[in-house]
View 1 (cartoon, protein in one colour):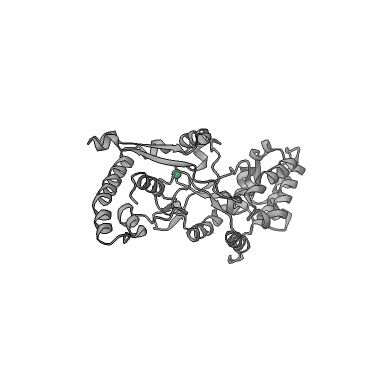
View 2 (tube, rainbow, N blue to C red):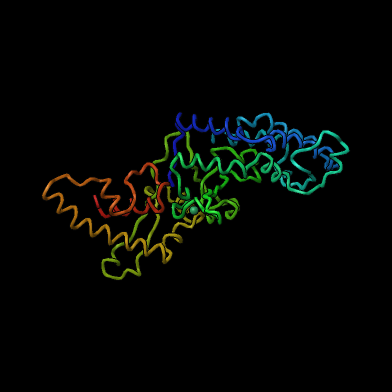
Length: 341
Ligand SMILES: [Zn+2]
């Protein structure tokens, strides 16, 4: 819903992520490079029917060579790298079922031959071997540093979950999907905190054009939530409705696509969503009428915007990062529309 500008500060942070990602592991941990080299060995030794083995080898070779860079590859380079990888192995081969073994292989050929063999899709094996599952909790700690707690697509749910052991973990969406861009599976700028509904695998490539990180000046907040209050004022709260519109007509198509892909109207107009909106409007009206007027008439300009937003909306008024609170954008847009301040 809002873009984050890649500043020097963020780039420094991402460099630390890339450099330190798996440095604190024990010897039992198979580092990505070892896993990838062993996958090359599996390709050669176990897949005699694969006619273009050389292409698979070249793909893996490039992945190994560029690995340090890929962890912090800037979004503007994604397509350039996609082309380089596609030139080595045609994209249709990424889903090829291959035979493979453990990520750690013994040096002795006879010992290797005794290992159990399993079948997997080539790209899935890459994601596994560059240790996405192990990178995920590390990414989570960086998301906390960035203050991102909610789904960056809908801002309607937390991207943080607690499992049965009360361990908090993040849901990430691969902005560029794993089956086509496996080399970006642990790239910092390709992992977007998202709720399970917005998570990529359910979108089947209909992901729209939302990009969280940008190297240019972020697009000026192109969308706005609008709550139709007319019926509400007429004391028919059941007819409340929330719309999500573009500020300028040239963004209408983009907004429509966003609405559809991320189900914005659906989420916010659900019975639970509307109950919250109804309470929000009541709170805004209450404060708008009495508190501000009374405070301002006795001591002008005493109203502290931050305190007011916190008291009325339950969020801080800082619009820069809407990903800290669920429905923060809806709350801020509604408060502005109601001229709370
Ligand atoms: Zn979501």
